[in-house]
Image (cartoon, rainbow, N blue to C red; front, side, top):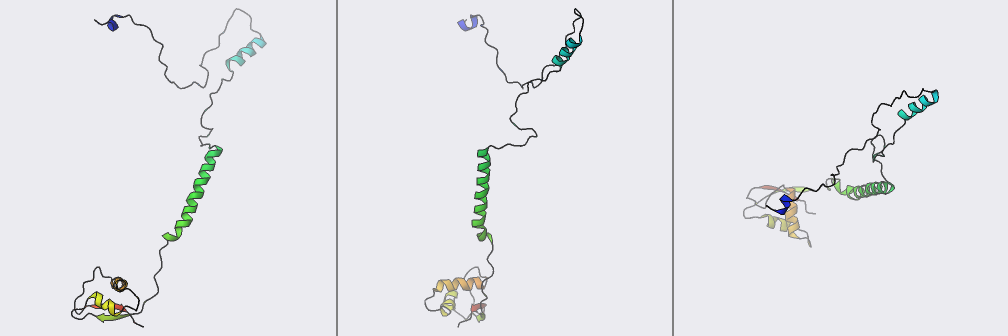
Length: 161
């Protein structure tokens, strides 16, 4: 057999476990002795000793269970509130939906044979304006998902000045 199994057990220190602290003294009955006659002063001292207040263990939370913040904690909370309010003010304008744009005067246009949205847009493009922008405007104005047109379709086009 091995030496570890044969060696006598050496007592070790008892394990320390955490247990809740006692906040009051253990309840014990006061000792009564009959050896000496009781005096008024002796009885008063015995009563005082039996009902003496015990030491209280300080707690980590204030009475009432409310959270107490240090000066640094209050500063952090105030700073966070200011940052959140500032971000809300800076980005709040973007959250507001834009109202409808200025009304556009439109005419109805009948698509002819062989015409495309590009050729129609080119006819309505002002000098210096990009035809692609006009195609996008016509697509949006007519609620179209693509640029496919067939002869005889009615589309809305902006009025030329």
